Length: 290
Length: 276
Picture (cartoon, rainbow over the protein chains, first blue to last red):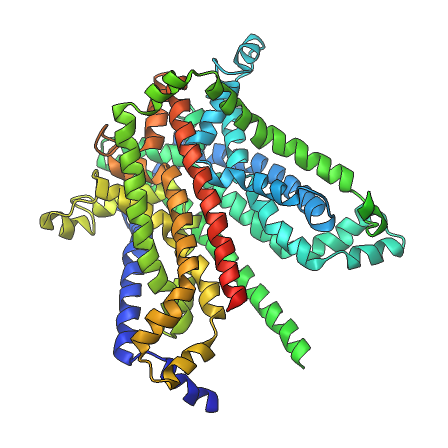
């Protein structure tokens, strides 16, 4: 009760409060809810049957398949890297650690288009390895390997960045205890470290996956946009959108609705994990207080 | 060597080796390739390519629209963070979760749906276009797309700061007779400023590199609605790699300057809170 009374002087009048809430909700309505609802509404303008038919069309199916393949290669690679980098950075002291973390974050501050350009400069026909690759008949740019490389570059920091603080927070005592009790390095990693960073790892993986499946700019630069071959889902959305018929727009939105569903799914898991962590922290605080 | 005595954990060599190898292969070598190609250019050529009229128009739109969008996000993001932290209202948790939606939604989908919303027959365009507010295929469209993309930055930077703000200080101000508005402008606003500026800089940095959402909504008309990243793609389509590289270096230089500024802002913000 005392707490309640003391808050009165630090609260806005109900009028000011509800005006602020209304403006904030209006902003969210226009910039978050309408764009989301519009994706599904536009996808269904030609009816359910057309929605399903457009998704089963061979070039769209191929784009879904390619997106899944690209994510299935690039996400595990970045998970492996994230685990290695987090172990080295969180469990050991060495010089240049801050600089290494800055380098790992680098892809976040590079425009996706510039990331694609880097790969063109490296592997394109006029690029550093262009002649050699051409002589050996290996295609990277304008082919699937280029799309994978671009996606790996863009999603590079996600897992490492989530894991490093989590591993730092758990410290090294548990691992040292396991080693003292006779476990070897791998056993310690599998049975002690991995379970303790499980949720951070899942968090990193879903963010990495969402970005891998949705990447547009970098992939667009290194793909030749050949329907059925080098079109990922976002590229297919663009190709359909640039088609002139009304039904083509509906097909673009149908494919986009799958990506929007993925985004909602990602948000759902993310919110769940954050809620879980908040609860865990509250339990720890409660235990310490008690 | 010294840490060996204190740390018995194995695997430093293996994980560090793999980290450096993978970092080099995926990030550093492509980066170095771009820098080497740039250094092969003469300064005169670089300057000519980087400051062509079409490029200047593209920078103006990219930086202008990014700044307007980041400023809009600073205002509405601050408001949204305040409302989410301080007030209890129906749907608060849902809105809180939805703030990250622009991070999760592929940019192509964002561009597609925003272009459709603001087009003449779209849900919003239907009302706005007769009023003369054209959101699709105009510079305003670029601002709208960038506002959407940058929305989470200010909110997410500000929320923890607002949560940790000590209510006692506000209570003291109230006890001393300050009105709510005066408390806000003289007590609360100054301690939020570093976080708001950090969020603004993050949104701005994200906006200048943004490509996916804008190609759908802007129409990409040279000198009018063409952003710098789009011009890079055009140069590549013309097999003018050199032209693309010159533009890319300008964007990269700006990104790194911003990164430095953001680091300074974050240091300022943390010092602010350590001393308060």
